[in-house]
Length: 546
Image 1: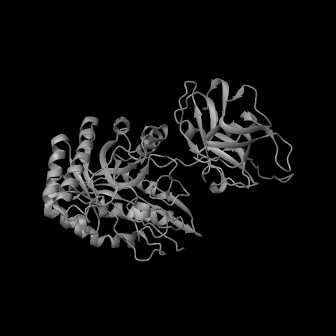
Image 2 (image 1 turned 90 degrees about the vertical axis):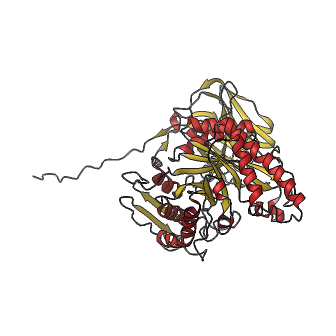
Image 3 (image 1 turned 120 degrees about the horizontal axis):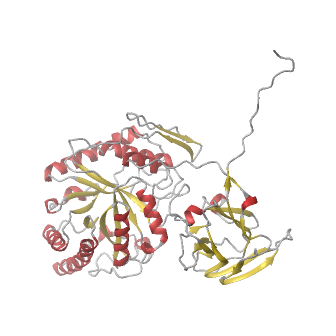
């Protein structure tokens, strides 16, 4: 891997070093003063991120609220809230937006309200997907390409108008600040009259600005009805690199934007409409700038290329007067769906997040202090037995609270959990977690396989707080529970209990719909932190020195 450098831009200095296959160090100095669009821009730049979930109920969880607060901390001012409806095949003429894979209207309204409370503005962005895209290879771009009669077109557009005006009415009622009338439906957008009717029907129920999100590299230049909407939307997954094994520099990526940038500038001038990148994104994997649209391509973790792509896009488009914003794909509603071991699109907890924060004016990510566990002050829950004051409230669990494993004689918890079963321990009175830094325990797997576990706390009123995964490289070495190996799990309590509420119950749950393999637990405790003790060495002075 070649050394990669992100060059200086004014007083904004980046240092990006590639060490070995995937280890890097990234240091930033924030820009001073903050970025300014200048007087040439006649419209504010929408500094955005896409926010997505794909299951009913997911937007109504503590995890979503926590993730949304993390999004707001980046300095982003806008979020595109994703909701997805489905049709069975590319030639279907019915659309379902009531399935368990579609978040409910109540959830969407709740997220919009919470985003507004956090100071974010919201673009509601309905998507239409095919029900089985993985095994069939179909995707939304195929919709309409199999229609052979006007009757099919009429039936599909009638279903689509019903679908999209449903969400337009919701956007109006919930106070969404912008609305997307369609996304990447390139098999249909040649039907100019039909799409003008879609836009007119949406305007009848929603009074805010409208966008259509076209696909890069063709659809954006083929649409003849851009005058009907307020912004030209582009999902900007333009390829910028021919060699997926290469680590392009920021300057090389900037140069690769020349062609698409000229096309977009001309498109904006032709219609007199600003351009918004309704999506732009790169996975944190090698080759992400060669195949930015490819969600399934395998590859090694590469933070460098993702971060370089972010910087190049910002440099090329942030100050253009015809650009009205960009929405990075994507910030998941699940706060654990991204991180340092992840190869997905999200910038969360990756160097790309630091690039984004610098351009959006967010505070730098806080550096992790060097702290040591203070075990002598720990609140012990289970160590060689259940501690006094704690009760076993487990369910769906076969437990032995005094087991042992080969080579050891200390009592342990041996557990096998039914689907979604949990080891749940309740204290006889509420307690504060504020004085502790981590939840910690030791876990050992068996030859039966790796259990998938997750952890959460509850209040005395039964309010479940944020769920955190155990099988995650941030919480356990390597991200895996291994057979016949004891490993320590350490989860920051600020992630489990962001608001610092008093709690009464702790649960370690099977995160799978299948029975868990046998595993063992021990040394379950809440641990405070202490700063390292620094030794002070005084200079040596020879006896008799003058």
